[in-house]
Length: 220
Image (cartoon, rainbow, N blue to C red):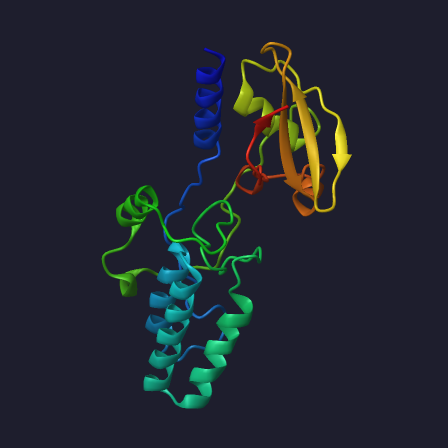
């Protein structure tokens, strides 16, 4: 029975942290004077919006360069190519990073079946008809319960098993470990955060930028 509960808890946690895709938006050529290149950039933005593997990103960047070259010359094609190669990394917190449509950063990862279905439901039929908009903060501030947003997230995932997070912290080489006592045979659950993400737990946060657990949850 205990193992069935653990399986249920793991599945519930995965669902609770499920990523979400925002509707498609495009800023054209990202403040670069684009002349007749807007549609090249819109198609490129569509690929970046949904994200995917590193190979897919490289291919979309090459297509952008080819489109720009066709409308201008090789110099501008190379300029645009290296601009997106440097500025479009999925690790950056920019409005035009690879996979920018997803609330949480995905990095380089092929879309699974569920994500493909979500993309299909939100993907515009004709990207050239989508108006260019200036990126805005599309997320709303959420209240904090415990003065620490990571504890809030743990509480949301484990409720009603945890009334209040009881934690001890230990620093490893690259992560903070949060041990949470739950009302389940006096067991502990261990959550792990990257150091960079742990810093976000103590700063004013917005719902869409809450850090996720970056390692599997397991019982001590």
